[in-house]
Amino acid sequence: MKRSIVRFALLCFVLLAGMPRSTAAAGFTTSAAATPASAAPGTELALTVTVRSDSAMSLLVDLEIYAPNGEKVGQKWWDNQSFSAGQQRSLQTTWQIPANAASGDYTLKIGLFSPGWGTMYHWNNSAGSLSVGGAGNDANGLRAQYFNNTNFSGSTITRDDTRVDFNWGAGSPDSTIGADTFSVRWEGQVEPRYSERYTFYTVSDDGVRLWVNGKKVIDNWTRHAPTENQGRITLQAGQRYDIRLEFFESSGRAQISLAWSSPSQPKQIIPQNQLFLPIVTNPPATPQPTATATTQPTAQPTNMPTPVPPTPVLPTPTTEPEARYFSTLPPGSQLPSEAECAAMVKPGRRRRA
Image (cartoon, rainbow, N blue to C red; front, side, top):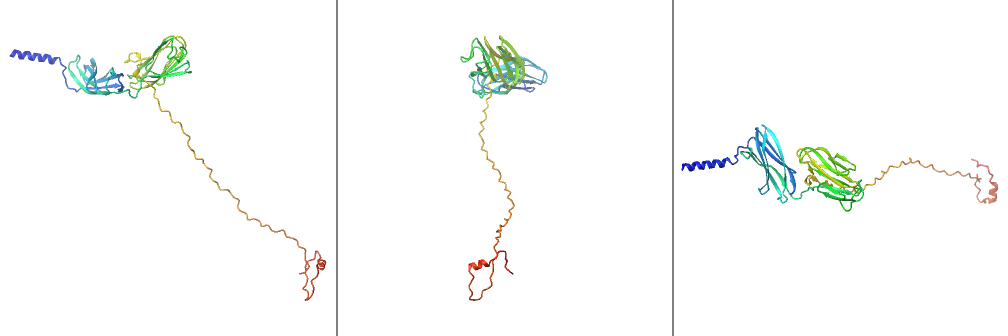
């Protein structure tokens, strides 16, 4: 009986020794974030884990991703990570959202263990989150205009390219575009995963120019065989920057590609999920003529002349011939005849007073 008890105790010790042992969570601070924080199925995300340890020690850092239904759908761990006392470190990885992923909020969880999955020191059940939805409001890729001339003129076609990695050889991008003497302009936005200095690369035959955030970083606008050019610019993680790539083909074979790299980003063709179509703003409404009230001139008082009383028009005095007045005739006397009266009137004579 005693021997059986000893065997049972040894078996329990062996089983417990092989299991992670949990300790208090004090002394650690952890968090996790996804860039972008919301994306569609099939998108590759950048995941950043931040850990701070109050004590100097080596840790196994475990990141786990859980779907809305609680099922674990992703995991990444880093073993033998050294921390000095009070040090904070960031660890980065990527995760491709499965094409059939359910929509909803996904939870990021972090565990800290002694190296080799030994003792569990810390577990954060809600270190961060990300959202998986439908196609979303963002459309990935670059808007391309193909011109049937080397100077961005002539007939054009417009399409959305998922990335820039073309080798047309002796052909052309489209049946409506000539095999030689054509040009292309790609426009949109690019979103880096890390806050670092990026190197952009183009391989072109023939000329190429590249602008990032309004800065020309590559300029080899010449006829040449397949040539790699590069330019550098510092970018911030999760921020979108305007990007424009121009290319022309003069003769012979035609090819163009666009890649990038940074201290944390291996060199690769810029993927579709880091490229975004240009933002289209609604054109301003055509201004309609505004009915303007016609301003009538203010009636000004007319300065009327001060009325002057009219000068009375006096009749021109008429010079009457002087008449001869007669004395009163005695009663019964006859009036003189006209002839007698005329004979008695003498001009120039005035009547006596």
